[in-house]
Image 1 (cartoon, rainbow, N blue to C red):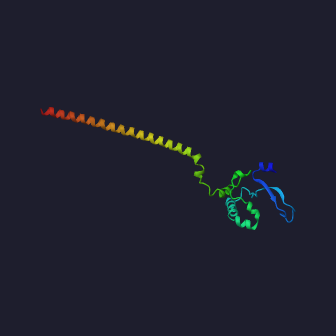
Image 2: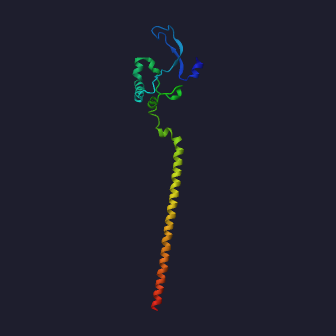
Image 3: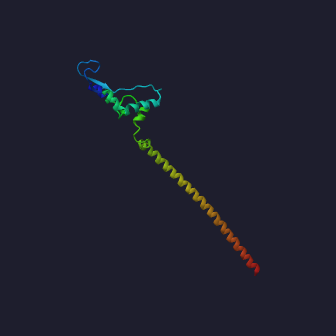
Length: 165
């Protein structure tokens, strides 16, 4: 029994009380128990799976009052306990209070966000350099234009002085 339990983590040792099934067995029996499983087809409506899971867990205390067997109903489930996958919407309900997707996957997402930030910074830097070069070229153009104007204006005043003399 211990070997079976080691190979199947969802199984555990269980003592079946006497008279569990209408008078049989007559004495308690040590046996292996496997958690109750609700098996569904993949075509089942997702909302229905979510609602059934929610109803079972939220009404656990009332179910236990009806039958002690519901005391084995676990509310802290994760897929690691089972050798089979849980339905996605059952997992969605069970993980509803867990950290948000950003918190859960931040370690995986953070490198991509960092790379995007670095690339955006590089593009902003390149854009600023190109704008500065363009501004410097325009500034140089106007400076040259003013120098030409000063020279031409200076030569006109020299001509006028010559004419007046």
